[in-house]
Image 1 (spheres, rainbow, N blue to C red):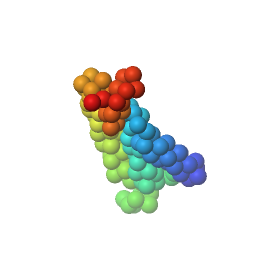
Image 2 (tube, rainbow, N blue to C red):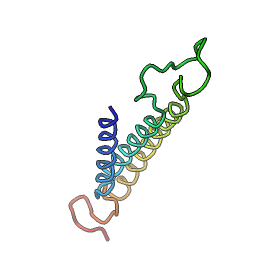
Image 3 (cartoon, one colour):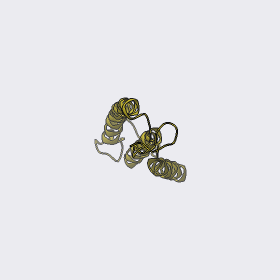
Length: 121
């Protein structure tokens, strides 16, 4: 299970970095989204929730109240917060992308190519 999770995080990170280096703004936004998913999986895996077996999520009588017997709730809360913030960030980036494309007529990151491939003045 650890190997599959590590491979998933590595693939998401590699794909995100590759898309960040692309010349078009939509690809950059998708790269940022993939990187945020990789970070979310990493934070989630650090809490041992996805990798632990036979640990109770809520308090039970007869078990001591320590993290050896229960799942850590902090990574779950951090991951949920990161998902909400990532969704809002992606929506904001898409609005800025559409506004920039409407003003400049291109979706290249540096803004030097026009719609027909000609350089802008």
